[in-house]
Length: 167
Image (cartoon, rainbow, N blue to C red; front, side, top):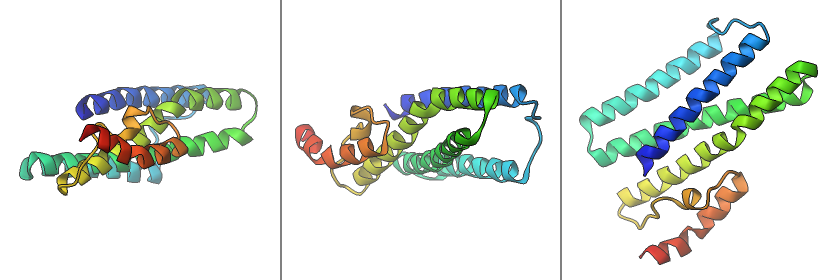
């Protein structure tokens, strides 16, 4: 169920935020400093929430779900990029910094991969359904427990045979 999936993602994301605050504390950084980058990301996040609220108030349930799905994919794309960049930075870090960053990235990597690939799968299948086309729900990415780009590509290719099993 998509709602349950998103609730799980929210809980995991809240834990990822806690991990970042712990890293800030460990490195003596002020987690409350508002940089221009943080302000932009905050604005984007608020805009996505506003878009979902607008759709929920004025659109059909199906259209609101599609808007929410697209907003989640956009947010997860940014989140995935941020953790990927942090993971890349870890390669050049040294000592305790490297150790702490590596542990943080390893803890969240599979969850972030799941968030992005599964969200994209849900979005694709819900859009296909809304267009009157056969959809695989839950999507193949969900069914196959995809956590890699290669796995996502395989799951999408396998959707046709999954579709035939469901119909």
